[in-house]
Image (cartoon, rainbow, N blue to C red; front, side, top):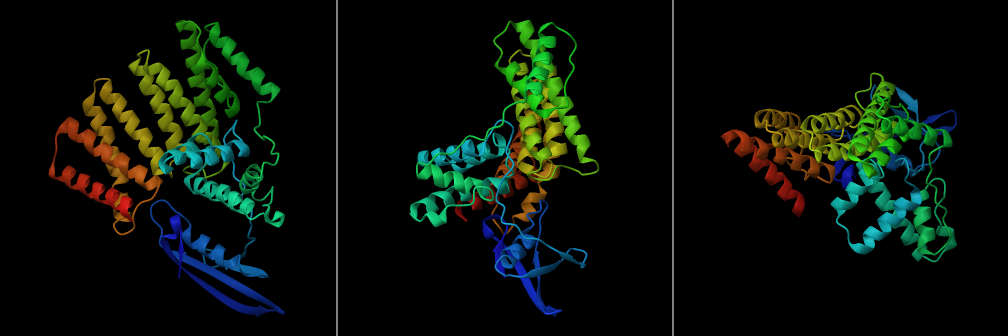
Amino acid sequence: MIGSGVMALNPAVVTVTLSEDGGRVIATVRGVAKEGLIRQRAGEKAARRVAEQLTGSFVVRGWDGHPRAMEWTDDLSLRLAHGTSVRALVEYLRAADEEGTRRRDVLAVLTERFALPFDDARLAMDRVGGGIVRAASGNPANEPDAVKDPLAWTSYRLELGLPVGDDAPGLLPEQQASAQALLERARRGQPTHGTEDVAVALEVARVAVASQEPDRTRFHLLLEAATSLSVAAEACIARLGQQPCAAEGSQEWVDGVALAAAARQVTAKFAVQPDPELEERGLALVGRIVTRLLGQCHAFVGRAMIDSARCVQRNGDPGRAATRAEAVLADFAVLLDRFEVDAPFDEHIIALEYLLAAVELITEVRGNSTELDALRNRTKHVLDRSLTD
């Protein structure tokens, strides 16, 4: 029995069965752990840790009981958002550590600006720290692998003052031309067109949000940005097929994070017009992107739902706002059952804070009740325990 999952707090049972087959020894490694609503794959991770300490061939039984060959990998590379780079990520984490930045704030940057899933964000912090430790050893043999462990390698070389290139990919010439064409159409007041290319859509949104052009022109630029983000998001969703949401760390996941962030920026510009209808439509776009591409992460979903409810409340419809907040209760209350014993961590703390925000919004609109009071107290109890465990 070993710890697995987040901070190795989830107990996992790993069984290793050795058998002989034609002169070979086969180790069958099976890991089992209790899973909650959002899978951590704790059993698989525990089995992988044990298997990586063994040598030879492996036959691992899948969930259906049938044996299947597994190839273990020590590849620790991560997929990053458009316009970012391994060097930028490492430099941010090193600076955040020197400045004593709160873990919560670091995770916000890693999961939004760099589009890392929370598991990968924790891995990134670990690998950057690992590179620093290896550099301190003074042994050149401890230099990490540049391909398999690029974060640790970059951190190692920066710590020693060695040169490191910047791998941030820019827009291709044809993508830049497409973005400029869409922006010029908007400046002429032509109907919005959109694009399925995520990089182009993000560039259009970046220019529109930063625009200092006259109000009418800027408004058309923002409309084109919103349309481009929507069309690009729908293309990502279509690529999922029957999948309920994108796999964490996949290209669709990374694109979903970037598109949602850009849609929030565009919506914020609509909000200062002020234009309640466009603000609500912008947040609806954010919600569509988040629920369809990032729906397995309660932290992302909770933010989208609460932002939408608060917008409706600000715009003069408290009843509809409370109804939207009730949807948060329905979806998130299950997290309290999950953390009756184990304390929540990182993304689950964020999710429970959104649950508490939903309770407070409903109470503000409809008044307190025995049920809301019990839910509030229970949520606060779980969150308080996260501060001490």
